[in-house]
Length: 180
Figure (cartoon, rainbow, N blue to C red):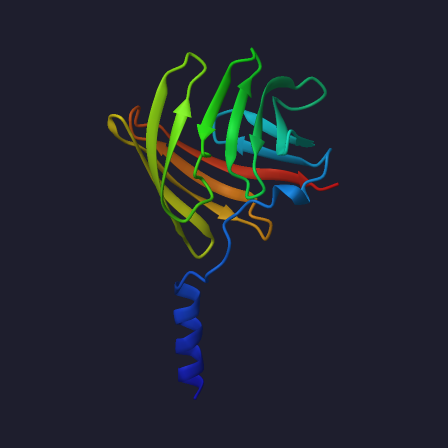
């Protein structure tokens, strides 16, 4: 009997449990902060601003301490799918219908760049034991792949990403999250 219980536990630990990979952006009230650090790269603070035109707005700031620099903003739907990003210089990028980062299976979207160029992408996302993994294709083939470990709200704890065009890989980890 003990062996049977142990074997069930091993199978369950190795099998992704069906869950929701959505980022519950509505749980991050205005003033909530998530700070992410990239290995060898910048520290970015994501500050929830609340609803703006039916979407959730997050402002990002680069750097630590008392003088972080405004990096831009992004807007998500209720599932945490990014639909628009705005750089600090005001350049707007739209994702139609959304960025497909929190949609299981195959999802196609169009990036409408600030210069008017329309780029079609296809992303395949699968659920993993700790969160999600994805592969993304663009006009020239494979663009990126990666994985995220998610918490109970669907917020990233750790992750990695590989840019297949440049060959660069990035590791990231959450160093702080404060909910209001």
